[in-house]
Length: 419
Image (spheres, rainbow, N blue to C red):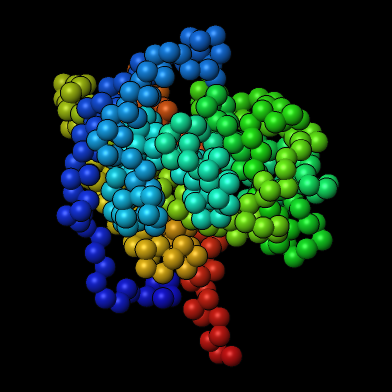
């Protein structure tokens, strides 16, 4: 199906009967149990003497929420095409992910958080049985966390063919040398495994030069240099770490899916991960709009409610319409993944990867403005939401790269005209 052509046949994007009870339970748990604990969790950061170490109370919060979710059967929804999951479609999962996106504690509560979902997809689709037993099993149980190491400080990583961290095969071991940064989740002390994109065959075709190699956290030669700051914040205890590899040795069997197949694995991983981010971004947009409306009705200035000042009715209306448009595009992309597969759905995934963070960021910014100075403070979640959403316009590919994908697909329809 070409980009821009109508979908032939029924395209059901609504809430199915199978999904409805799950959606109600997830929505209630996020609203009633996750959101009320957010501030307490944040205020605990650093109280253990190390910002990247959980306090007993933080672990109590996380483990308590996760235990409740598992007991209620609300677990691993992201497994949309696996016997280990619920058998949900990507469209069905989109509604659940939107609810999880309303709280920073939401996704992990249901074992659906990045980067673990993408990494579990790698193990599920491409891992050997030994790799699944060692790493996938505890990840599915929510016992450990993981990190995905692709971006590098020395090259333009938006073009992944530039990735330069070297992995050299010496006997029955891979030897890794180089640096990675923005390793999301690598600051978490529960992070036990890195999936690392490496240059293994510099002279090969540009899409066959790279491989994915598993490196356990704490392997000799691995040095965490620093947490990268996001607009001045270190995002502890999750963290986005800058890591150096100096003659790091791992067994040859830590190779994932085969030598030179790194791009294949990366595309298989990133397609679902990108759209999961978008689903959660729509949830954040909904929360921001709710905060905006509540503040507009609750505060007065110049003898009027804030909602009656300036263009606030227009801002609220535009925000609602933009959320609805973004949600429909997200569901359309999810539908395409379900029907034609991740690779063929790439143009739709790229569309929503641009649209969802941009719209959510805009609405969050309006909510910040409505709250005045309080909106940029720690007293409301809006500043953190804004920072995350602005970062999302770079994570898993900057906007310009995704627009390029969309434009190339559009232009392809006209390439042979006049030939």
